[in-house]
Length: 360
Image (tube, rainbow, N blue to C red; front, top):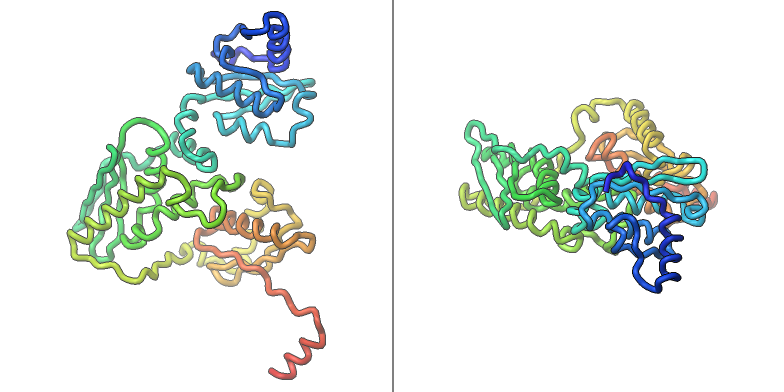
């Protein structure tokens, strides 16, 4: 069905009930795709089912008009967030209604096998794959390749420093695994082989999360329990590491790898780093749930650390979530090595401070 034709959701619901009362069975709508759709009392679930019906019928796009009075009881952004997981969403607001247009429905459907928290970044990456190409090897670099389930991962390793100089992949079809391996290749480039074996897939899982969504896994999230899609990358990375050991006699040791801050970030003065951190917070803080009075930047004297102060109105559970959101923000916008520390809270008791001072 073409998105040029706009379905009127409220009229469809009314027509369904009229047909149900008149015939006691068989809702026959003008669009064939609606044969599989049944309205639900929950508008979010009902509209989601409507879009999924268009996907099942092979439609690439669909537009639905919903009256404001139908949307009024819903929480702000709830419906948009749900629909955005089904395709590329565009919202047009009219005087008495809102039109939701979703495109790329079939492409998005191929990503439904992975958890929703990973789908947005995987879909965006799939449109711009960069590492599905021939492997580049130079000088005395060692080429290695591993294959599993028709997907391959290849490294060019510099043996003197045991560094992965290039990483590429190949595989059939089009879907989440190609995007996943493309992300992995970007992470692998420049890593020591042991760091790749130890943490590359952990880094991959963290990089793919949509920060505005809650993870379905409670507690510690690891690739093993995060999603089945991380199994194949882990197999390929471990196989390549073992092949490198066999080829060179390399033996693993205690892993102390730390990439450190990027030179450009480390070269900035503390005031320059602080300005950039504040600019990132102002530009993207609200999108991550960080309000202007929630977090204040105290200092950034060390290139790998930023000290923050929470607003007095925040409870401890809220502070924990905001600290994680803040750390993700500064790593994406400023430097991936940055860590967030909370300002030390002084003892409010003057007597204890005097005693401590006297004893010191």
